[in-house]
Structure formats: structure tokens, C-alpha cells
Length: 89
Image (cartoon, rainbow, N blue to C red):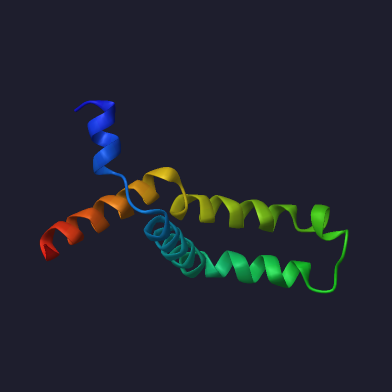
């Protein structure tokens, strides 16, 4: 499949893409809730020191979030959306 054909197949409207990104982020936050809680507990009552005091928790949270919020996940959501749209037509 050529690049142009693939781009056309994976193209969705901007509003749809924004909605899919939002869905992706919500799922990531749900999946990484334990890391979010650990980071929030570490950060509670801190200001500037949160940067170095909570570095480990921030790294763990970011690693978890990245598993669920990357380009390949977004592309998969787009494909699923396009398949669903084709079924409805």
C-alpha cells in the first residue's frame, strides 16, 4: 500500500481525532491510577522540591502513561473508528 493510500485510510476529521485523543488519555489515566496516586501523595504539600523529591514517582507515572498514549495507540483507535464508520454505512 502506498503512503498516500495509507494516509487517506487513516485520515479522520480533526474533531474526531481530538475526541479519540481524549478517549486515549482518559483510558491512560484510568490504567495508571495507582501511579497517579503515588505521585499525588509525594507532591502533597511541596512546591519546588517536588521536582527532585518525586522524580521516581513522576518517571513511573510517565512510563505508564506512555504505554497508553502513543502514536501507535492513536492509529489503532483511528482504524477502529474507521471500521465502525464503514459498518454503519
